Image (cartoon, rainbow, N blue to C red; front, side, top):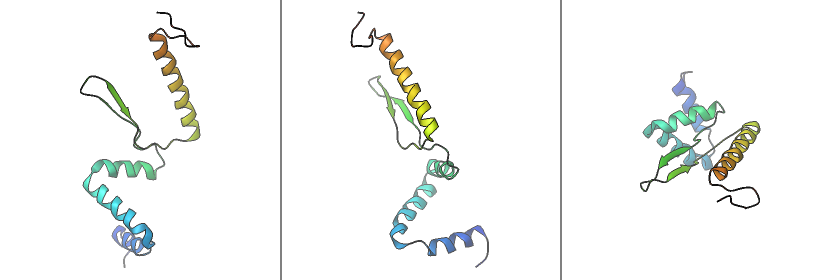
Length: 105
């Protein structure tokens, strides 16, 4: 077999343990049928954050935020946690809530 990408791929596939074949087939089907899977797989292979957030507005006007799949470094996770706390405090402040459960309204 030659050293082309296809040759390398075929040599790799025939050495995959049988218990991994289903997962590998599922991945191949997804990246072939959906460009988003392919783009996220490339990011994953570069160890970048993948499938971070999907946000939209619910039909009744509510904001919907759904995390699908996240991979963060420990430093990035700490930074995001601090941002989440700051956003929560700002939100509570806008609603007139003070720490300790007391309301200004």
